[in-house]
Image (cartoon, rainbow, N blue to C red; front, side, top):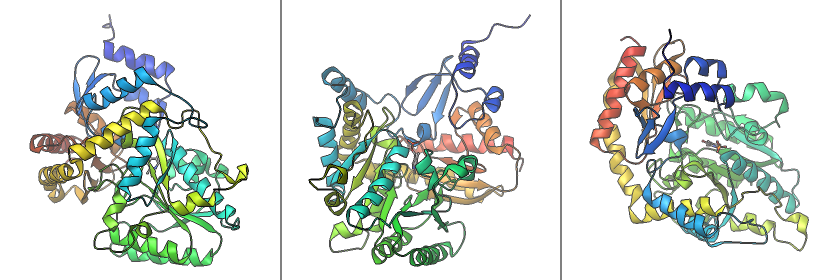
Length: 446
Ligand SMILES: *Cc1c(COP(=O)(O)O)cnc(C)c1O
């Protein structure tokens, strides 16, 4: 006689029958069933039977201040009772206006125009379309090509996938995709790679002179490729090349924005030591999503410059940017984002993160000495390392082992990383270290 399924098993089985899980081979999910989560409290996720898991990847990098943050929840509840939604064409509302104003101020007015959408991939689509259309409105319709980086990730809709270079997401759809130019990735794991990457970019820009609309990249950390890092100096050189060849620069800060790398925008780290007109030192577009609503509601947006905005200004309707999504600028999501930005201002989140990043460094750095580990690296609240050798189904096995140590962690290939909520103190950093060390011991015998 077999035992009745537990509530945990029951929900997992129903889920596998009815829910098609994202980024998942469903046949594998039958072997490694999804965690049946009932509640979230701070950095912890609690399953339906009361076991807990530390959300070390911030639920796909969206959750900045932990789950069930009372301040963000209150902002959503207040907005819910006033106005859950209204269309943003022909109407406007306080949460959207306030949010756009705040984001403009965070870029010293350099990126003073906010276009709203719901998911990261749609923000990327918008930036690509806007760049092309802006050149077209200026009589330069031949500027219609895009340059992206090896290892880059910009989302999985067809346009965003075209500028993405992660084989596992891309290969099946290759025949459907517009052709973009791939240039070498700056990858701190390989010496000299930044110089090579810049030379490759210069070569491509000069070969395609007059045909390129924009370069798109993830500043400082190429996250989805496995936390591949580069320096602010590389980004400064890219900005200069984009100016030289008169192409737009799209900084996709969907993952690295909102304080993740040690500044509110990762791009700000390129400003150190620069003087003069700040407007010149920003990208032409920044995309934001993920953390902006603190892990509560889907929201994405594209920030753009005065020059881009002006290129659409006309009596002619078709010269306008006519893109839209039904939930564009949703007031609940904007209210959540405003609460997130208020938190940054009031709690000095960026300064606090520097302390938290130091806790992570101290606790996790011993892993760098482990012979099974290579390329230990950190940028702000992102810590990663690669596991040496080839290990069958490493990511899945590590993930399963970590669950047993109350840790929710999903390696990318053989890259183990933590990207935790901004709630790290010495004790939680030590907890992460212990969980990772034990999981590693179980999966890779030293
Ligand atoms: C997650 C991500 C996206 C796509 O965002 P979705 O909301 O998943 O569509 C785009 N760019 C980067 C850099 C991302 O990390």
